[in-house]
Length: 426
Image (tube, rainbow, N blue to C red; front, top):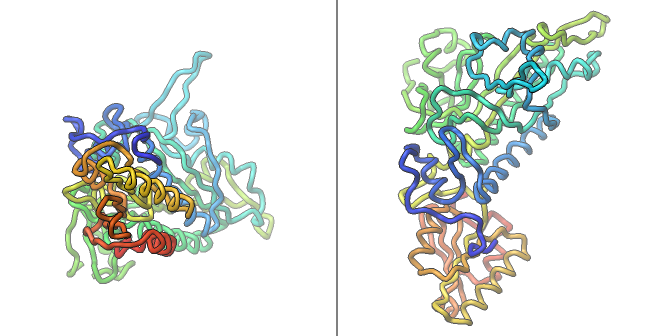
């Protein structure tokens, strides 16, 4: 991608009404556009990073047996009435709309009901279970006060996986696999060292659920961390002694921290299968309710958490795994045609080698190019200038930490496939 042709441009300032760090940086760097409070558009750079996050999540969900589908965002009230979640007094975050032909529809804020209803056509025998459908689908939540940039929005994509098992024993086996998959996702996205599996209230579904909380000063939640076990409890269950008996967390060594919820997993039991009539015949031929679980991650929320936590004073600092490009190639020709030709050759060679390159071929000053490069946060900046042309090696600067090396084109190409530019930090 040539930066001279890039759809969006960087900005000196974020909108005056935007107070969250993640949104300020993502807007200034040209990753997102703010439509209104709680509603953001993904621009080309933002969509590339968003899709990298989605790709990581998809790989880990597939690895534990997930099967991807895509459900409608439009919701039939009759299905939700069966679980008593259509009434605004029971669920206050609905967006609802009226049909011209009469009657109401909802815009889905979650998908337990419609998927459970759909599964009645797919499940009849114990041989049909377990099964683990999931999707990346737009959710709509009528938040009274959208805040924290992309972390709490009114429209967002959610990865929601639902497990359908024969009984609690089979469910618990998958629940553990899902928890491990979530840990891998956050590790791959660059948040592993700061993300904790956290005990929380299960609400109406079960006594406890699990959140995955990333320690961050900008977080809305309070958690209590046991560094030895890499687990935590959130504030609402902090005073419940049963939690500590269950986990073996020590109440004496916990430390308080602010955190951002980046994922959650719930045991649903038979709450939805009972209400919607989802049963299977067991080996004895008896109709039995399906045992369910729910597992959610918001890719844009995860992307915003990375932006919030891993950025610095200059701008975004993307881990190589989710960066929009592998390399930011910066041409500093000063009108020198030999430098321009060399930069074009480097761009062609890297692209041919399968490297994702943003090529800053603009007619702009070095300071402006470097400032934009720092703001965008691509992991490796490769500079082509009269100086590098004379030396026969290119200046390679890592965005994280600023570590600088000088490499020939062949060295650069050799290093890139082995570990995203041979970075000391990925």
